[in-house]
Image (tube, rainbow, N blue to C red; front, top):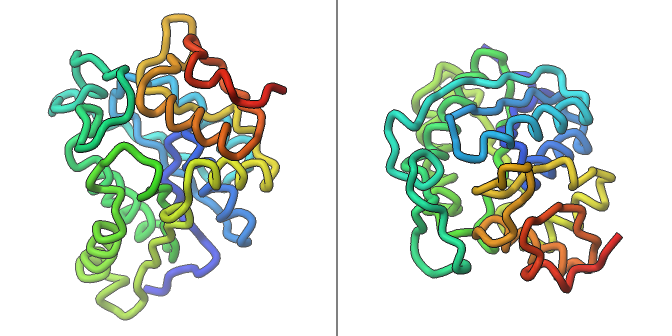
Length: 237
């Protein structure tokens, strides 16, 4: 089989990072197929964000795939374990979902081979992140090698290309890219523990890193936080 060099699969969670990834793929001239995984996550409202982003970017196709990882548990995002609110700390936090990026990339790979897409975009980041082991460059390189050993396209000499344009960006860099691309960052969703009335909590690791990014980028933060203490110094619109 021959892969289409102008077709890209995007893992679109609905977060700012995946939004920017999709925007960069579109800017590069690729036709985009977005894949969103409904893994019964605590912050399931991110699925609505993914749908908004996919519509705004006019993607070729948007698949929302059900995969109930609550059957596994093992994470604050897929169980009743409390989401930490004390700040980003060293080590792997309880919001790490066991093997999530390995699972998601495997699904993206399967879709890429089925659709004949050459490129697979994933918004992993190894600088301003929560310490997840499956966001590191070594993991992505190892997965890419495995992918091209385990697929018909790879074996027949037409390897998949894994694109990680955010890998070495700070959250400030990512916020600036969203602004440069003309993306509405306010339509993305980051919070791990949304409030009952649909606000970002403002205190989980994801919210803190998001707010930090806008502050350091010197850009207005369009996010509606329930707790604004950690975003109070961000420029206002």
